[in-house]
Amino acid sequence: MTPQEHTRPTPPRRPRPGAGGAGAGAGADRTLARLARLNPTGVFLAVLAFVLAGLFAPGALGGVLLLALAAGLLLLMARTWPVQAPRTRVVRLLILTLLVAVASAKLWG
Image 1 (tube, rainbow, N blue to C red):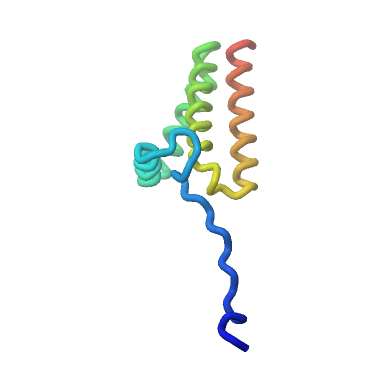
Image 2 (image 1 turned 60 degrees about the vertical axis):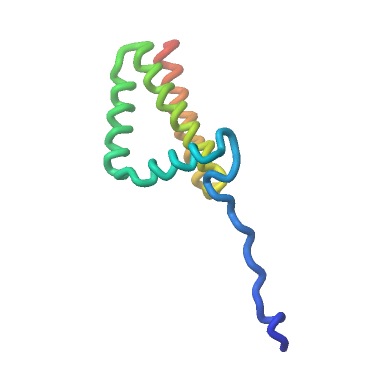
């Protein structure tokens, strides 16, 4: 056998997080790099506090807080979409849908 017969084909490369999409550029890459350096526990606690504030705030104020959180989540999802596994994409879309539904209920309910 020749050496060419023993080589494996290389798998397709996955795009980098900053490799396209809306707002792609050096600024977006810096923002993602800064987010990656944050303490995950601190981010979790901050988002949890934001969600609880939105849930317990009365009426429209709570809905606006939850919609602001949904907008931030949507921006983050758009930037990281190319590198996420399909199962992760589904879970993120379900969470976003639930968040928008609760915000809508607070605004118009």
